[in-house]
Length: 384
Image 1 (cartoon, rainbow, N blue to C red):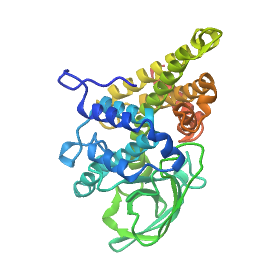
Image 2 (tube, helix red, strand yellow; image 1 turned 180 degrees about the vertical axis):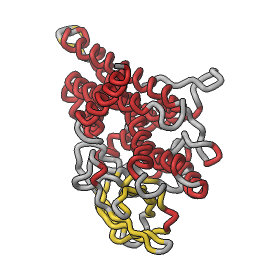
Image 3 (tube, rainbow, N blue to C red; image 1 turned 90 degrees about the vertical axis):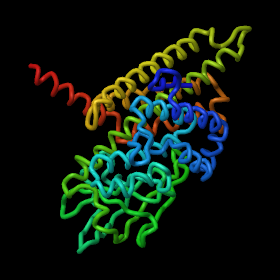
């Protein structure tokens, strides 16, 4: 299990981090069945909300818990270590809340944030479309304004918890300029298409969503046209990368624990298989990758304490390294566990599948590599 962040008075674990650890412990065994069933039970989702983990890094004046980036990361690591869908719920809720906090009006923050923080509303981020995956600037969803209403038309794909979300933050175009709008899913014209049997994140209630001339009040638009991707969606995506990075840290550490435990208990030729050089090498590489990913995630967390818009590159690097680490950890853990790693209830096997989703969630790894390289060229070009 991941180490817990110390409370701000230095006396012990942060209460919400401890609560996340307790929740993760109770979820460890049933999480395999959730993956098989393709959903997290509604009572579990209510427990997550009641525990105060949704949008917990939001200010207390809006119902949040003022979690520091480091504390939020540890929460994501605990949840990710047992179930990527639970971490996914935390991610999408906090993504939408972060975008609202930074770019919403005072009235919008007061209206929406408390309901997101206490779980009265669960949120989804509806950005991806056919032809607009990692290239979100290519979205074609149309947002038209008429009087005091907006009309939203388009089809969004791969919306995490889209099967159950109460409100979506939708990225679209108004008069050719990218903007974002909040759309409640009980409005006329919203249709959900559940996605099942995908490679990973099977319990995350993923859906494709059609918006057929859906009408919402004009005050549901977040930030003016032209700021939809560069400001609102960018804030949401940056926040999402951070919790995904920490969730991957949790997955890598969980795979390491399962593999090491098996390697110590399973005997072959009279000795634990962990004493065989090939197995020991796999364990050592997994341990180093997991530790390195944790350090990069912690570095990103420290950079983010400086305020909004800080630590973006550190977060990109942490997400890249952590996704790579958990993919490798899952692969090697399944190899060490053998048949046990391929069983339907294998945590390592489930993490192995989920980790691949984390690697491609914003496109191929090369997309992230290009971003990191661009930042390096700007930095050292300026020095030159």
